[in-house]
Image (cartoon, rainbow, N blue to C red; front, side, top):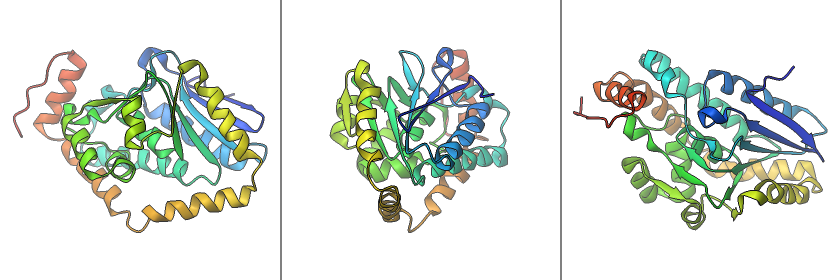
Amino acid sequence: MLSDIILFDVQDHIAVITINRPDKLNALNKSVFDELDRLVDTVIERPDIRSAIITGAGEKAFVAGADIGEFSSLDSPSGEALARRGQLIFDKIESSPKIIVAAVNGYALGGGCELAMACHFRLASDNAKFGQPEVNLGLLPGYGGTQRLTQLIGKGRTIELLATGNMIDALTAFNYGLVNHVVDRSELISKARSILAVVNVKAPLAVAASIKAAQQAYDADKAGYLTEARLFGELLQTADCKEGVNAFLEKRPAVFKGS
């Protein structure tokens, strides 16, 4: 029996994966990662599935980030391992021979933005917001965000977003090249389905080869992902990170001291 933490439905050869923690703004935790990993394998392995959509439940969020409460108990090695775990799952999405599209309905922040970027392309509702606010916790993105955001929107814009922690709206994300289409929220899934209906009648081997060939443009050197995970683990042990996490959980401004 499938866990209700992620909903899974297949119609017309399109799988819809819905992260289903709306009360937590669909935040990523270990259980979500485990189930997402398994369901991506299902998409890849089942012959009746030709493509997939990843989205979030509820009106407010695609995925509003990681479950910050889980960070409090992590040391450097376990933090680096957590980052690598997320990176490997997102690599599996990015390397899928079947098209996986992100349908971003609301907030895609932190790990949620990283999940969206791991998909082959993104559609956004007109109320979507994107950002990597990890700097507010004394951290950096750990699931590939430093690498994929740079690939998608360029170094200058990436460093500005990473260093400020600011959010951008759907139209800005479109202008930056982060999303392919912006639509009314009520049309988001139907728009994704209409694109995938076109993909699904194309030659599957040609689609898979196109994904693989395009991905090669970014696969020459994976060292950046390893560096990101190592720095994520190191930052978890800083006083600033402990202050940032505690401030977030206590709903107060953080006071950082550079230590």
